[in-house]
Length: 441
Image (cartoon, rainbow, N blue to C red; front, side, top):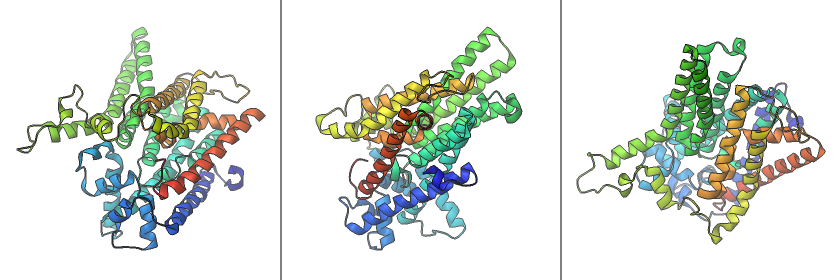
């Protein structure tokens, strides 16, 4: 398929595949809007209760499920307690994009329908940019532009499907994660002539930490992007202790600051909530919420536990067994790819799995693989397990692993093609179900 749409450059190939794939998904969503009413009409009632136009119905199909929360938050911020389960990153970007469009005379009404339109635009642009960022990241880390191109195209075809077209956080999270990790990879590169000296690389680390912190405001699992930083911090601390130098000290400090930036993406929203609901400025007659007295007063953890029933083994019920079956393929892919990439050597196996990077860059790949395994285990034990299929869109290692297997021997290549077939089928079926407000979401 990639050969069929290949353009004069890798980036053009990604853009062409992106346009083709998104067009197919949008047609699926539009077709579902013409078939009949959805099970839940919250989105259509919220966006345009008096409108029966085909465009309004189509937009409502893309604004189902959690997208309703993101659209409302972009209009008026957090109001109800359960809304704190959704990060502020996407609503904030939508609000700023809408203001920018308003300033040039577009979408001036500023209503919920206009906000939903901007949310869809942000998702599409973010997904395209994340595909390009993954190509740059892969080309730098793998040292193989063809495999980097295949991995980026696999991200375009992600089984997350319509979630990367709707006002959801996954597309923005993927872009910020991949671009942030690209800058971090630049700082790990031994090619000083191509990427500048120590100060420029230190600057790349700080900007990387900032971007990954912003990614965490989109999705809290962005904290896992801190795993490579934590590993590099510990490694460079040992290097400094064994051979103290000003450059080594500067490196440790820079990594520490970048790591704090990533953590701030999760801590800052919790601090804002604590100030609002637990501080002395609480309105008279209102009692402090119970989560204010917890050892770690996190409104996010509280609402996830109370309203969404998450927590260690809380989702392990007989009624949820079908959702575990739906999540099983992606859990297997994430775990296997993470393990094989984390334990791979520089020598190529029959399946094609290898790490061409050396030194600090190889450490980056292995730490990213470890973060991916942690995600899979956490999703299995503590999340609504079915969301792993869309969460996986923001993790690079399994795309690289699959790209390498597609280039491996006949057995490995056949397995890789089977995974790609699963991705395309899952995304297509999921697009029909999502736009009809049917699980899994």
